[in-house]
Amino acid sequence: MRKKCYMLSIAALLLAACSSSEDTTLNQEPLSQDYIMLRPMTTGTTRGVVTTATNFREFYVKTSAVSGTPTDFVQYDNIVKSTDGTVWTTYSSTDGTTTDRHLWPATGTLKFDAYAPINLTDAYTVNNFPANQEDVMVAYEEGSKANNAATGVALYFRHVMAQIAVQATNMDAENYEIKVLGVKLVNLNGKGTLTHPSSSTGGSFSWSTYTPWSSLSTPNSYMNKAGGAPSASSITTSRISQAITLNATATDITFGNGPMLVLPQDLTEADLTSVSTTGAYLSVLVQIKAKKVIYDANGSPRFQADEIIFPRPKTAESMYYLANPTASAAAVGSFGFAAVPIGTSLKPGNKYTYTLNFFAPNGGGCGWVDPMPTNPDVAHLTSAADPDVDLNPGIRNPNDPTLPYDPTSNKSRNVSNPEEYAPAGTHVAPTDNLEPGAEIIASDRPIYFTVTVDTWQDSTNQNLNM
View 1: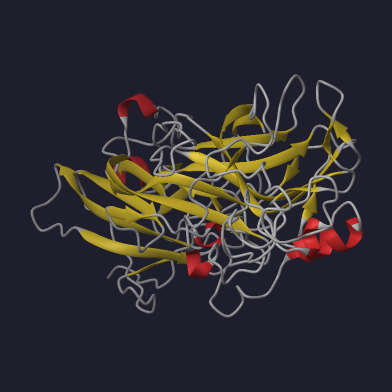
View 2: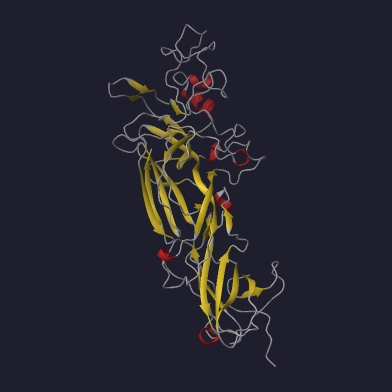
């Protein structure tokens, strides 16, 4: 009578904790050469935050006959789990309580279709908050008792998502102060149909023979903001104290929420001058201030020292920046979205690092006023309920910060004495209001970027000059 065992030891699964090209394999001692053993292999797994051996713990595998198997072979689906990354067990129940070990058929070849996460569906929708996104991986291999009973079946998992990281620099910190409170990625297809591989994803694998996603649809947007995952209760709490002040060194602006995982696709650059834009763009939640008097090409003052440039001041108090710069900064408070179009071709298994360069040399500026500041509205993340976000960042309005500037109101800016307001008609209204889609600071090159692509294993670094 054949000896019965209840645990399947698959040995240590060692996952790279960083983007690396090294393969990690599993060494194991089989309990019985008659049992089917799986050896998962992958290159550093990632979901919003990088996954290591401490949090990669389960995958799903479907096994069926290819050819030459006995007529009584029954195909099966199993969940494979590990509690410590060294001992892996197959389960026949989705709750992971009933072990179900399988024997090799005496003859014939089996195919193994494996994937993670275990709740993956073929019609897949990406979560719109990066920290909750999942790194979708698939593996395919064939095996037989003659070839794999002793060594196990090596399942080489491939990443079928693309990964986007975002950094930012201020390349003119002498003249401008830039604070960042968040970043969003707008208008990417968020739903697709997954096609599982039908040939080995091992050493001979080539992306030229496998396209994982089709039927891309449902444009979506993804947001990272200081303070973690948004909620209806937390969104009314200001996060300004957590803002990052940029300098010449590229700084990660995902606020610990990890990179954004998206479906591979070809991006079409947004026309940011169109409020109903359909193209892709990145948008940074920023506050921009002149640190000293900034002069234009004719030698005339363009911005005053300590003037809040973006978002435009909204209250009478915040308009007094010449008289009281400190009070002005406190009165402005909120941040606005500055946008830049992107047109990258995103490939599966690649990481793309975008570096947004504010005030890049030779005419760089700080982007365009976001034409869709409420996209996405994740638990009111960009709605008026969020005290950090100005939905009309290009508009000066000393009367009502929730409304655009009204030139017929009873107060308007005095260009000779900005801290003084009087009835309409006695002073001129602001002439520097910016509508959505306008350049925040006019320049001959408002955004410059570079893209670096590395396989996951890392992908391209993309500098975006604002």
